[in-house]
Length: 331
Image (cartoon, rainbow, N blue to C red):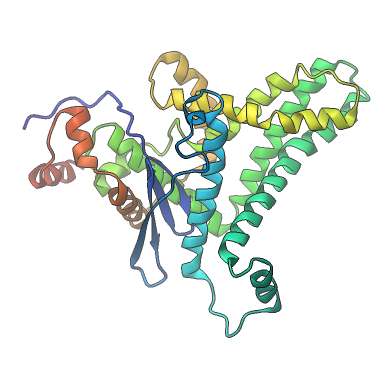
């Protein structure tokens, strides 16, 4: 069958994240985690995740649904990371006193307890580092710069600077660099499909590692929008300024989600312009993957998404083995 030009992007609806030596992909209520085990084999787990507000009408309300999507991403992300890390945990001869204590406190539900605890701890760390610290530094600067508007902008700049420095520092860790490579493999697979290319290693390698629906872009939007909202906070009480910033986190998350959601469905020039800072940031949070990583990402996609059917429905052509061979030979 004659091929059509594939300049148009079609929204696939799939998304995911990198995990330890693997990739998690989610399509509607199904998700798959593919992990390259220490022996070189690829393990794939497929399961359902409905979300904390499953079936609720709240998920249809703009700016509200983003809060639940954000929380679900944290929960599912940590669950997937726990699964991937289980292949690399050292075998213990007997449980430690800490393990026994956690098992006793959690009433036998150690995995659930640790997941909830890790989520809360990660969230508290992120708030302290990217919200409270920049605000505290800006308060010191406020003693010398009496202009409140200028101080609000400085706080935002400090927040973004701290975030970028944090990424640069953790990227020096070998495991984090590999995580960023798997992150790149995840993006490349989605870009490959949404650009109408058959999901092969060769085509994925040619695809971009940057994607407008990335979580890195979401976080950057959170910081940029916080600058705008915090700009209008004019309260003398130090404590109440901190409290209001914390209370506005769901609002900021909701707005950021709608922007990311729109960006993933539109190629309008204004949307491209708005998405540009997030794509710049992804040059730090994604790296070019090797072929083994791409193979893992492809297995994760194929476990929950029929990309051949998607190409036929969205781009109007059928994929067969001869075409796949032709695509590979063009590289």
